[in-house]
Amino acid sequence: MMLQLGAKGHQVKWLQQQLLQQGTVIAVDGDYGEATRQAVLRYQLDNDLPPTGSVGPRMLARLAGKARPELLTLRDLQQAANTLEIALATMVALANVESQGNGFFDNGKAVILYERHIFYRQIAVTDQAQADALAERYPNLCNPKPGGYIGGANEYSRLRA
Image 1 (cartoon, rainbow, N blue to C red):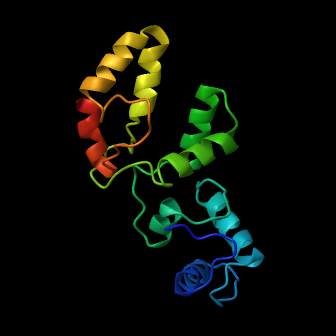
Image 2 (image 1 turned 135 degrees about the vertical axis):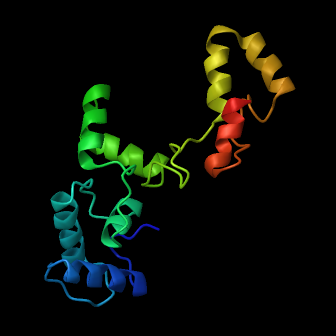
């Protein structure tokens, strides 16, 4: 679940109540307006979370008192951005999009998405004939077209194969 500017309803109200209980002065009206976004940003900065202004799994876990040690912190993301020599904002966006804002499955394994078309493309760079042969033999693992996803932790079985 992702809450962001413009969201309305009971989930936003729950968020606002949690922020209020944590000492943030905020109206509990169920409307994720600019005041809620600012409160979220302050909470994220105060709790070593990526300051996105939207609420995803990391912040929800922290608010619910279920902070999981494997969830990436702002420091973790900054370190990764430094290592990769990219902007922190790019790293935060990558983490939110590619891992649905979490980074780890419930079993503790890192979120992955095996992409058969990327595998095909990487092989084709050096050996087009081999890429085509693999695509013919293992179309769910090597294919010029995207797709074939199993989803979730099951992607590890595709990676192993």
